[in-house]
Image 1 (cartoon, rainbow, N blue to C red):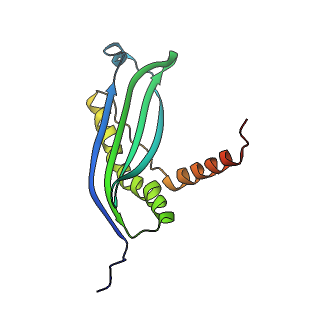
Image 2: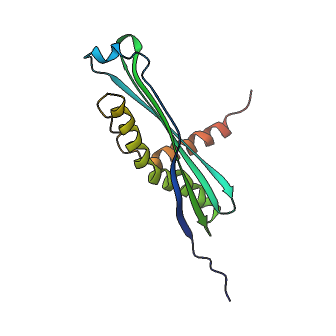
Length: 152
């Protein structure tokens, strides 16, 4: 009987690992009518948790500020997923963990952020789609550049 070598990819669980919402200048901030500046930071990481089972985490920080760097709100979420991945070559596994899994997790994080901000009393923030392939390639190029830089 031949061993099955077909690639396997299965989503075991998508969940919120950590969620933080701060409105440090409430209630006075709600009286301000100034349009906020919104900044978004994003990072991904992933690794094995057991044989052929991986956790991928997507951490997104959204901060809205107005003049004089007064914070309206600050939201940070770590949305995670557990994925079963089998019979995938190591070179492709890195792509699945760095691009494929974050693409699956992102819509969940986006919805949670929007909901948390609305529940805090602000207009929801809808994050634009993210090109995880470009982020992955940029990270790879930066890592390669760092390897080629002589140590001092």
